[in-house]
Figure 1: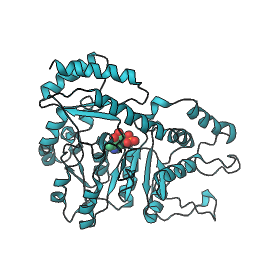
Figure 2: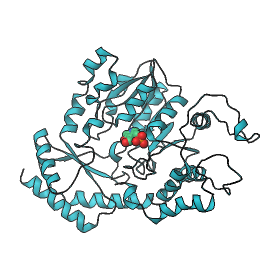
Figure 3: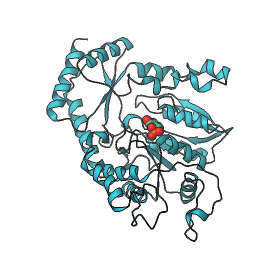
Figure 4: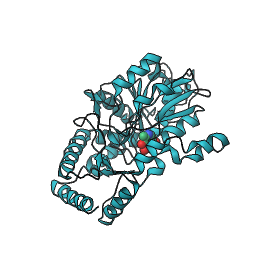
Length: 389
Ligand SMILES: Cc1ncc(COP(=O)(O)O)c(C=O)c1O
């Protein structure tokens, strides 16, 4: 599962360097006479861009704000519609509403991501952005999606917050749209505690997001920071040097995390005996998925509840389904439309397919540090529960 399992001396040493070598300069800009030329946010962004094979990378405060900044760069605002999906984290939708646009949410198919067969039906002249979300490590079929977005000339922002490390068609998810965003919060593949990343190959977008996340600073080399030039208004959404120091150490562990995830998941899946009670989530490409969860679903909510009760009693936990379903399914988010009575009344019931699918589903987190022996024991527990159902 996540980078927190692997936190060790590498992160500690990376942070200590800021105090030992950089006189404790935790700010990403200025203080040139104190910092001995140590710029960890810059280093982290460069390393991330190289790893992902993209031109530009911006480190920011969270995945939520990465999405906000990216939508600002694309000029999204009141009157616009942004298409995303009913199964996502609350952040994807609250950010669209906070920016003043209207979220249009599409049902999930058996990949648990956006049902692309339904995408074109939701496009109209107000549609300004499509946000596919790569939920719980599974890829979106980006070739299929891009065929539609290209036809209508609509930009695509991949919300790959839950899939950092998964690949599609040979390159990392997040690199297939106009913009990709990632979260580095404490539950993610790699973590800086809190944090977010935006990647893009578009120079204009890259310039805007960098200035916006830093109060509009243009980082003009001809003047000191206090006299810096500006042409847009922004906010302070900067990552600190301490977070970036941790990020650098975590990024070094990414390949190991992905390899362990894939090994552990495929072993667990192989050890779960064929059982007519369950179906596994459809994965676009099993060799390239993040593999940080194993998701299966029952034919009834009762069976799913029965399974999870016994699974929890055996000392195991699930990831998001069903334990945090209310934070990941739009049908429970009436609080978002408190000022719009009509919308609120119709809000909850728009996604019966997703509602039904999620409530019958179980998501088993895959742990990076699990040994084969521990996985065999886990499979035994799962098989025992399933056999008695
Ligand atoms: C799909 C998705 N989008 C956005 C976010 C927001 O990321 P952050 O927690 O870094 O704000 C998350 C975090 O859980 C997420 O899962």
